[in-house]
Length: 113
Length: 111
Image: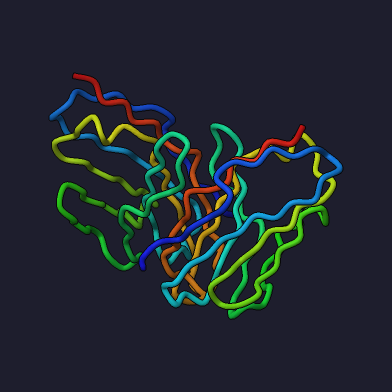
């Protein structure tokens, strides 16, 4: 298995909802990432997990809460989001920490109403 | 500081070569990457080059790195309509997981 999968593909939620995004990889990678991509912009790093521990938080608001239950899974819990949080959320993984190439999933298109 | 710049748009005729350019500012960059993104999709890693190399070739793709000028280019030979996409160059530094992306170059291939 050489891919990163993300579910759901699309998500529409209200500002009072709680939802979660899920990311999975079975390549034995030990680093996993969340990126946010607004329309016509490059991806922006949100979080990095290394060996299931949070190693980088790019000053992301607390309404986004990451979780790494095991080395294959990465979740992003969403609560009380704002319409400006609507974006494509991309998950990525890499073999190790450091400057290894990152492999991206297809993303979850999130719309906050 | 970290900054990666790309031209925003490139239009080529099918069958011609495409050259997408990128400049970066951080001389401590270890790896430089090219990613492709098709509409509504995630990013596909196309190729990467280590900073101590000056060229890398992979089938239709050729990456050239001029470390002195901090200039990176991606050449796509025999460009096809399926190559139409946004191409991002990105840099990372040894020991860091953070990728710094350029704004992306939209490649349009016309008959």
